[in-house]
Each structure stands twice: as C-alpha cells, then as structure tokens.
Image 1 (tube, rainbow, N blue to C red):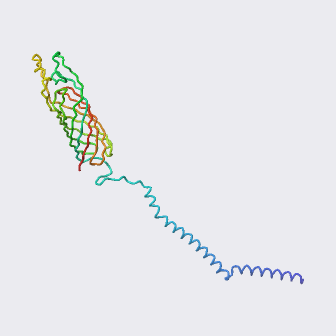
Image 2: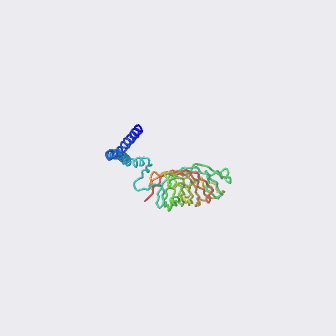
Image 3: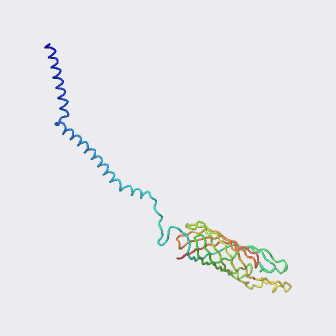
Amino acid sequence: MKTKVLGLATAVAVFVHVSARAAEGDSPATRPAAAAADAEKSDSVADQAKLKTEKADEEGPGKPAKEEEAKPKEPDKEQGEDATYGHGMQFGLRGGFLIGEKMYFRYDKSPLCRAFDTSKPSEQLKTCGFTAPPAAEVALSFAPFDSVEPYVFARFGLSGESKTNTNALQLYGIGARVYTMADSRLKVFVEPAVAWEVEGGSGNPQWNPSKLDPKYTLKPEYKKDLIVHVGIGPQYDFAKAFGLFMNAGVDVGVLRAISANLHVNIGAQLRFP
C-alpha cells in the first residue's frame, strides 16, 4: 500500500514540474523578449523596403535620359523652313542653258536647210539633221500646290541657225511642271508646254533661190511657228529657296516645217517667299 502511494506521489510531482516549466515559457517574464525579437524582425523588413525604395528613386531619373538617347533625333532644319521641300504658294525664277540636235523636214515653201543647189533647182534637200545653236531660257512660275507649278518662259538663241539661214531663236510660251515626291529634296518632274517661235530669216542670198535662179520663183517663207514641248528630269533642292535641275526634252514645230529639236536644259531655280 505504501509503495502505491509513493509511486502516485512521484507521478504527481513530475506532472507538476513539467506543467510549471511549460507555463514558465509563456510567462510575463518571457513576453518582452519575444516582443523585442518581433520588433527587431519588423525593423529589418522595413529597412529592406526603404533601401529598395531609395534604389528605385536613384534609378528613376536615369531612365528618361536613356529613353531620350534611344529616341531618334529630328533632322536639322534650316532657319525659316519646315521639314519638307514642297513649293506650294511660292514664286519661282529659273534660268537654264540648252544644247541639242535638230531634225528638219521641209514643206515646199519651208526655208532651205542648206545652200541652194543650182544644179537641181527643183530637187532641193527635204530632210536635214544638224546641231542646234545653244540657247538660254528664263522662266517665271507660281506653284498653287506642291506638285503643280505653272510658268511662263522665254528662250533666246545665242547665235543664228546657219543651216536654215535663220536669225537667233526667239521663243515665248507657257507650261507647267508636275512633280513626283513633291515634298522631298530630290524630285522628278514632267513638263508639258506650248510656245510661239517668232524669229525670221537672216537674208543670206545663198538660201534665196529667186535671187540665184530667175526660173526658180519659189521663195522660202519664214513663218511664225507653233512649238509643242514635252520634257522630263530631276530637280534637287539644296533649300526651299534654291535648287538645280536637268530637263531632257523635245520641241516639235509644225507650221514653218516639221521639226524636232532634242535638247538638254541644265539650270538653277530660286523661289520666294
């Protein structure tokens, strides 16, 4: 009986001791230490978040700069001009120098294209080909749109046309240039025009059959001539106010004779305002 009582007492003592140790772990004495540990952990998390925020603030201003570097720079513009080279609502003044080759098909009363052949008074040469005298051209234009530029022009020969005994060329007309890629520096244009040719003969008797052979009374007639022109060429604008051009074209005459003048016109153009 004593043994049972002793064992029971021992078991109760052990249970009480274990319960006391367990209670001691969650006692008020240990709670401040645990709270301090939790506070230290919270401060550590806050410090890490603060460091990340400061780092993001430091890197933030740098990103727009990088984006600005990556953004393509706009092309430099000349003072007083916009980004394109269209010429809408601008006046133009241009000058050119022409050289070319001419084919000449005579009517019966057309001017001769070589000196009169007295051995064949009724069989004068009907078809000729020769180098046309050089000429200068000036034109005044106004472009209501970038792609269309009407103009008036005059062309003057730098010497007479000896092959047909004709004075230096005098030609006056109207036309238009129609541009492709009208707002770029390099353009290509097509140019139709009509003109009136007014020079007369130079009076050399070698081209006047009636003065060389009384039997040959057919006198050449230096009629005013209607000229139809078609041309095409490039133009390069160094600025909105200045450019160079080259025009390859053909002039066809139909009244004085049937003529075709294949020529190249090289020149410069000023524009304002």
